[in-house]
Length: 134
Image (tube, helix red, strand yellow):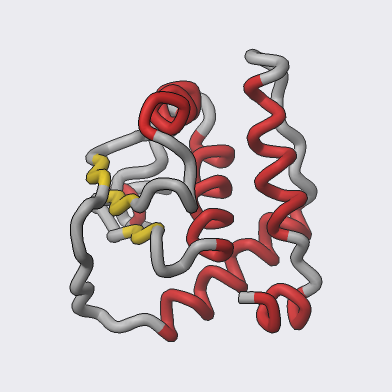
């Protein structure tokens, strides 16, 4: 993780801090620069490519279904269950669409994937396909 972040110039801790700052000011929009969002996508892509297609994950693990951009709900679940790395998670896709905070949702999940790649697992749902989400 460290080498990839340095290679792409990504400060993942800063990204997570910015995204979690929403809890202090609910309703205030989190402003991530486009360049930083691109870095998040590039680094997470490299991590996904390094991991196997078939995941063998041990218990205990928290399993999440559709989030659909409901960022406040995601944060509320983290508050209740615990944040990575204290808890491990597998997300079953459908991170974006419908909710008002799809960008914040996917950026936080990807940032956690980058920082804790062996504790946060993201599967692709139909809403992560271009044909669904135009």
